[in-house]
Length: 150
Image (cartoon, rainbow, N blue to C red; front, side, top):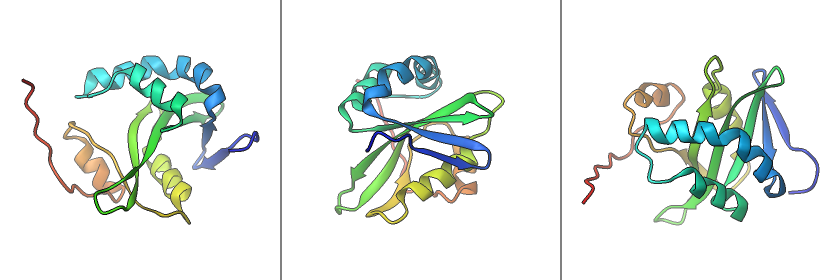
């Protein structure tokens, strides 16, 4: 990406791309919320894994603001599926209490991948409440993963 700021406004929410050189500063803002997400759900990652992926450039961070206040964030990666198709994987997303960034977030991500070779978007969650929200925004369940720790 070039040095110009990358901002998109959707339904009053501003999505700001955070370049690698700015990840360290932005991470200080999102780290407490990453910990909340990891504690609320089964996560096979720790916040340090997210930081490493962002600094390496294998994932991208978009901070979300509403009325100039930090409202949340979304972290995405591009994955190749078994058939070689590219998928936008929503690794971690968070909306601060009092803000609802889901609808604008989905619309933002759809616009982000428009005119690319990416053929779909996906996210994983063990929280059953996401099934209703996912369906509302055009996602459908394609598999269920069961895991037993040994």
